[in-house]
Length: 264
Length: 351
Image 1 (cartoon, rainbow over the protein chains, first blue to last red):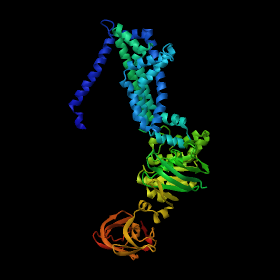
Image 2 (image 1 turned 90 degrees about the horizontal axis):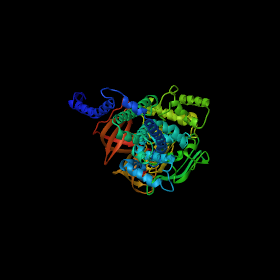
Image 3 (image 1 turned 120 degrees about the vertical axis):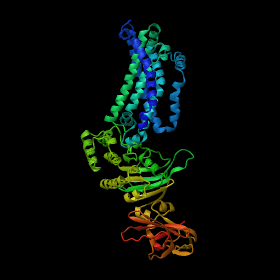
């Protein structure tokens, strides 16, 4: 133990890694401050916030993010619960299925969606509302690996089966078991899955681009094509947003251990 | 009809798999404490889970208080259950855990609080209501689990190896607590265990199980002293077995390596031939004046505290002899030649 503390290699690698991660970030941040020649200003950030399209697209993406999170929770918590309880042998299969979004490119997914659902009898791309339904479905699939994994790990941390049986023997029905016993003990898992899902949706480009919805991803591409300093500012902003998300996960999961322990 | 009537329960998991429980039938009277005792995989837990409603039997029926419950889901059977892993709800305090069943049943808050307090008093943890499960020791958690199961006043209490995860000392302490509470509430109880000591000390009757079947049902005294099958005899308590030749099946006379031995019961298959003579270590005496005498050489002497166990080689077999410890006890020396004796009524013939 004491030997490793003075190991110079440790410090070398820590330094290299730190430089690798922070130099580009610092470079981007520094660049985003230099819109006005010879001065350090937040002008680029002001311009970003001044553009009504930024707020519009951010609001759209955030709304879709929240809807996707809700749909994902409603879909994956009961499904994962059922698999843990009744079909544990199916778990590897489902795990593989949820990995598909990593293997199949988004472009394939979006073309499949368009080819299938823009034709009769669906014609879902004809109105904004039905297109939003389609894009939400796509987002749910894209974020599936994160949400399933988070919930799955959460369920493995508690003894789902025995807790369910204990609640049942006390008279609780399925819904009661799920809402009073399983969900509260999965809070941290669901929260971390939700935030990653939210971040995925907010940063997503291809689905929104091909379905022609005013999301943040396409907006950033447009801005990036025509301007120099604003994209850097946007990049720093989205980075900050991700860090805030991670910070919330850390905060809540730590608070959870202290206030509402879940036996870890 | 008895209070709990289990008839012809058979359960197999998946096709081609052997029966986990095979034609299990048992009548339990109200207020009785029954233990299912057997090695792991003998079907005791499966039977319990069928009674609780967590497993569906492939055949047979369960009647609780006169009502057939096979098609009643677990949450409507009003059967309390205590698990080996405690299974307290980690997100709830002790009081919330104990009150959970009452909340589900929609009881008014005042009644719930009174009942929770009463239950915590019963398990002797009155001041622990506001703690979370992870702040309790294993023994305390299991007490709370017991209180939680009892709070809804179940008509039947089922315990699935409730003490297996605990330290030896806590186990013995909690064992007598369970018995005390069961006696106090006169609650019909089924207790699953692989620990013969637990089964013997707690139960009104023991059901010994092996390979999905009932081997024997009886009081602890009957099970220990008059085991009816070879499995029961060897699983409950320690047993010495001598390979003998039966010379008179009707009287139970036999010979072991040329030495004539007498047993008080007839041979089980009523035939002369080879059989095994069974005898408990505590009924063998070093020296002594029993009717049956064998001589041998001491292999080892183990001092176990209240008991001293001596291993003696007699001919081709090794026998265990248990002696109660006392201060004036003279322990035999290893390699010493000794004579063992036992009365005819202490041994019995098995196939």
